[in-house]
Length: 117
Image 1 (cartoon, one colour):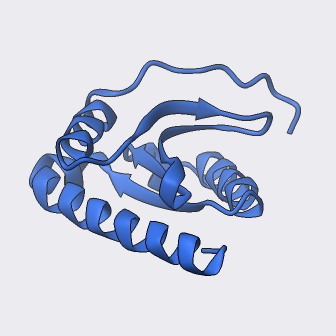
Image 2: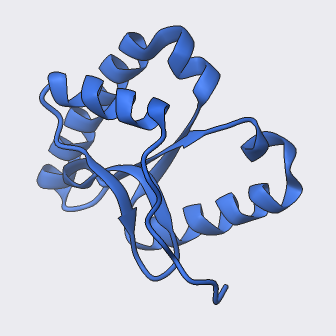
């Protein structure tokens, strides 16, 4: 995969999720890139990447393969990736943000306690 990695502008749904998580006290980075990929959102303290996905992430075979590759590189860096469809955020932003906030706090505790995810 030798394509150039460029930062994108956050989508409406990823920005809404970021705002909701920040209101819950979670530090969230937007459009985090490394030499292999860019992820929509990242919670570094819990080593969680969040991808906010449109329908094409489930209906385009090439996009599915790209997403699998990106998740692989995140995993090699110790990050777990959550994929959230836009329509789910539209339906239940608050519930999703609350669950991710709680999970990130629990995961951060485990990382500090055991030095791993």
